[in-house]
Amino acid sequence: MEFLHALQTQQFLRFALLAGVLAGIAGGIVGAYVVARRISYMAGAVSHCVLGGIGAARYLQVTQNWSWLDPMYGAVASALLSAIIIGLVSLRAKQREDTVIGALWAIGMAIGVVFVSMTPGYSGDLNTWLFGNILMASREDLRLVAALDVITIVLAVGFYNRFMAVCFDAEFAAMRGLRVEMWFLLLLCLAALTIVALVKVVGIVLAIALLTLPVAIANTFTGVLWRVMLLGAGLCAVFTTVGLAFSYSTNLPAGAMIVLVAGAAYLLAAARGARA
Image (cartoon, rainbow, N blue to C red; front, side, top):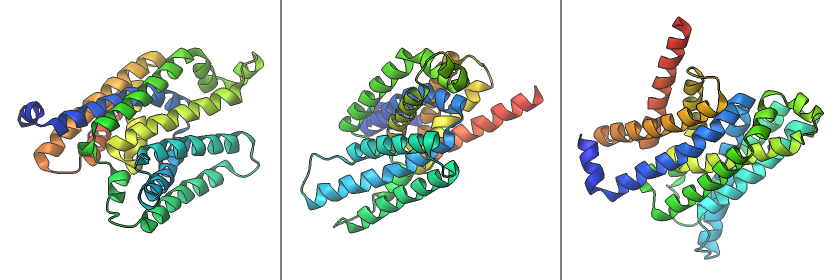
């Protein structure tokens, strides 16, 4: 009740809640594809490469006076670039896939740390990007997350059948003439855009949890992909709201509380499935 009352009087809480709900919409839709295709580890690598783009954008913003260059733009660019690299490596490289993905995971983080350390002035906001600070969401952040939502939803829903074919039976889809590689890369790019939206909510480290846990819970109730998407998006919104409420009442980090709520719900759903 205290949280609900605060929502009526505190604008930053309303912005935080709206940011979480908006990010959760794309998270539920794209997360269903990510879990079905079993590419969570690739999405995890993309989420950590995001720090490289954020660090580079912040460095240019401060040292070159590029005030227009929001770190979120760097996040989008680095997420898309890393998704394409990881996808091409997965499809064509002769190197062990897990080794290359692990290397990109570490290199992306390292580049971000280097750029942040080179940037003059206070660099304490690195923790904000790593672990999230949804309470700092601004109108500009809401617009960007909403724009990412629109792009993600249009593509994910508009090409539903093609993505479903790539996720469940890529070999048969290729035999039917579907350009599997192209659609797989596009799916990774959609996951990258969704991760950027989730980074603002729970941070780089925890973004993959919010992308996969609600969908994993939804999978215990239904096996139909579009229903998993709807239920996953709804659960994202619920976890964000409950996590924010716990964070407000306990004065603990919002991103961590959101993921803890999602994790607890997943354990309960898994226990229910085991008993069944």
